[in-house]
Length: 159
Image (cartoon, rainbow, N blue to C red):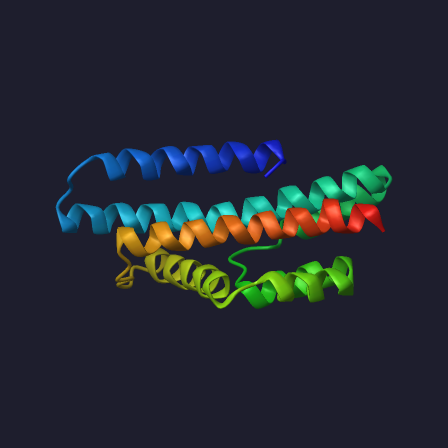
């Protein structure tokens, strides 16, 4: 991850996950923390996509196009993996294909589960997500963000 905004958010999450893993916490308290962290990981997905695609646009377009893309990216909320693939495909259909190629079942499940659980949590429903499961999802969400950044800047940059 190279984008400074993405790095800052990632460091914040890494620190929170690290703080919780140090303590022997009863399962009910861990469950509450998992819900809180799930909402933050879902936010990480949104912020990372906006930051990476926004930076790509800033580096390659004039201010008018950059402002337009930024305004459209603010509408990206709670994106599941299909939403992300569609958005990336709007930038370049080859990007979508490349992202599909590197998206494992684990990454898709992680992204989709984080967003689904975030929605259940936000609407006061039982999420039933454990800290250990969420930590694994977060690892895969970071891979997805890395994949988008690699596609946008390394693969597309060489074209």
